[in-house]
Structures are given as C-alpha cells and as structure tokens.
Length: 307
Image (cartoon, rainbow, N blue to C red; front, side, top):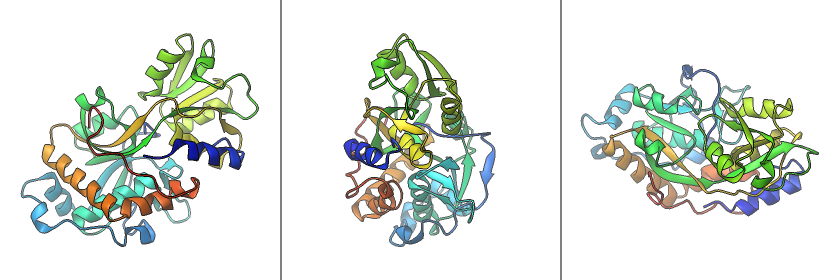
C-alpha cells in the first residue's frame, strides 16, 4: 500500500501542493489502437498467459480473438492515463496496467481506450462496450452490486485541494458552510456529507471539469482521490493540497458483473505481475516519478468488501 505521507511530502517540496474517479466527455470517445507498443521497457518482462488459461468460450478467448483489449479509462489524468499529444500514446499507471493485461491475454499490449466518466463506467461494463475499467475505480459494496472488481491493485484516499493562497481549510470539517466541488458518482460525495454535513456540494463529470470549476471560484475546495490531486497539482501550480488523506480508497479493476471466470483470471494476472516486479516497474515509471522512495507494497487481493 502506498505511503500517503510520502505523497504529501513530495507535494510540499514541489510547492505545488501535490480512482475514484476520473473521466471526461462522452463514453463513446475511443482511441483506436491507442497503445499497441506502449509502456516502453516496463512491459518487457510482462507475462503472457499459457494457452491453457485462455478457456474456450471465455471472455479471455473473445478478447484474444478480437486482438485488442477494450479499456474504459481516461485520456487526461496525468501520471495515471493521459494521452501524449506528441505521440498519441496513452501513458501512466492505469494505462500501462491495461497494456500489461492486454499482453497477458493477447501476447501483445494492444489496447483501445474508451474515454469514460465516473457516471458511465457501470453502464459501459454491463452493456459490453468495454472489457475492463482501469480508472482509479474505488471499490465499494454499492458499486459491487453492479460490477465485479478484481484487486484491489492500489490504495489511496481522499484529500482536499484549494487554489493556492486559500486559507481556513485544513481538515474536512472546515468545509462546513462552504461550497465544495466533487466528481459525480465518486466516494467524495458521501465522505463530505458525513464529515461536513453543512457543506454545499456541486458536482462535475470528471476531474478536469472539477479543477476548472475550482480555478473559476465556483467552489472553495475540491475533494478527490489524492492520487489525482497529486497529478493535477504537479501540472498546475495554482492548485494546493491542504490535507493528508482522510479515507482509505482501494482501487479495483472493473469487470462485468457475474463473470467470475474472468475475475479469477485477472486476479491471477495481478498476482503474477506483483510477484515478478512488473507492477512495481509500472508504478516507478508513473506515480513513482513524483513520489520518492521505492514502490509500495500492493494491497492484498480480495482484502476489501466488494472485491
């Protein structure tokens, strides 16, 4: 599990104040063949499933026959899943994990990204538009009634960002009586209601919209997963993270509800890439570029309700 204290320390040093839940635009926006060779050297030792593991009639066989893994994800989440404007490559922690899973199934890291939003992920999985969701997708028992979750594969927590120079907010309770920004259908909403019941919450569909609303003074604070806030503040010096995480948010890989065979397959893959160091290499190449120290210990698979 990531040391959140290390994230906060990097944030302070960077002077930028550096799940569940990014996404923009329409769910139908796809990047064909977005990451066919991606991940650079981090995928060199990524494993490939044995032929016997691709069971006849399974989701794995369907993906292998198609020749690409269709991933619900983001194109605009720095360090997590962001399209490089120069190369067209989608890069980051979640993006490279998607490529590694594609390599495991297909033999090559061939991925198509369907740009999804926090309020559309469940539908994309249930109607078969995407095979998996890698998008800082926090596992909750409520969500697990609609989708299945492999993992967790990472753990983070909610923090609070403000415009640099804002004073008077150093804890969730300080949000009482204030207008607070949150992503639609994210764990931030119930957390704010619980810890700051007098806060007025306004929601937007994705992380970029929330950041823009904060900069436009439509709210005085933005509550979001710390991993996303670290990435946002890294690229935008107007933002400042003013609290340490006050929740534990385990990320899961979203899968279609009821496909136990595929869930078991993905969990076996996770165990393999954690054991052989691929997970750690992907982390170091993305989130690890702004978090000092060695890669964290991944959370135990199946360790949280809903996983």
